[in-house]
Image (cartoon, rainbow, N blue to C red):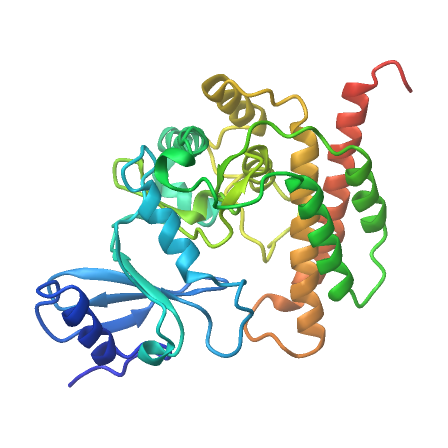
Length: 349
C-alpha cells in the first residue's frame, strides 16, 4: 500500500521533474515524509527505497516572496559546496509553481543529529558535548573566511549600512506585532541605535547560526550547516553574537524555548568568543553590542509569536508561555549593553 504523501509534496510530480532534469538519479517510485522541527520553511525526506534526498519549500498558503526564498538557499549551498563549510550538495532548483505549488529545491540527504536541548546532548557526555560546540565555532570561522567574490556571492547582499538597516527592520517588526506594553524594549532599541559599532569587512553570514541548525555526526563533527534562508553578505559578528545569545543559560524553568547551554561540558560564552577571536583574528571588543542586538531580535520574534497566539493564529503546545519569555530577553539585552558601556567607560560610575 502506497503511503499517503505529506501536504505540500507530490512524489509523482517530483519524480517526473527529476527524471526529466536529472535522468537516472531516481531508481523507483518516490515516497516522502515531513521532517518535524522546522519553524518556517518545510523540509521533507524523500526516498526511492535505496537513495534519499531532502526537499525544501515554503510553508503552505500565502507567503511574502522575500520571506522564503528557495533560490537564495539553493544559491548559497551551491556556492559553498567546494569550501571548508560543510553543506549538502544541491541537486536541483525548481521555480515553477505548477510542480509542487511553490518554488522548491532538492539537496542530498546528510546523516546527522540537530541537537536542540541539553537533555538531547546529555548522552554524549561532557567531553563530546564540548567538542561538538567548539566545532560549531570553528565552522563559523570557516564560513566567515570564505571570499564571497571567489565563490560567486559578491552580490549576495548589501553590506553597506547593514547594522543600521537590521536595527530599523526589527524595530518595524516590533511595531507591527506589539499588542501590549513591554517595559524596556524601547530603551533597548534606542540604546542599540546610539551605540552602533563600526562593522568589520563583510562576509557571507548565516543569519541564524546555532547548534540545532547543523547536523552533528557520530564522530561529533559537523556534517552539514542547514537553514540558509536568512543568509546574506553582512557583518560577521552578528552571527557570533547570536551564537553567544543561544549559548547563554535562561533562568526560566521548563522554558518553551529550548537551549543547549546547560548541558554538561558546554563551553562558556567567554570561551566561545575567545576561540572565535583567536581563530578568525577579528576584533571582538564590541561583541556585547551584537549579543544585545541578538537578545532584542529574539524578543521581537517571540513577541510576534505571542501576538499571533493572542489572536488565535497559532497551533501547538507551548505557545501559551512564549509571552512570559519576552521580558527575560529584554532584560538580558539591557544588561549586556550595560556591560559594554561599563567596559568602554570605566571611569564612570
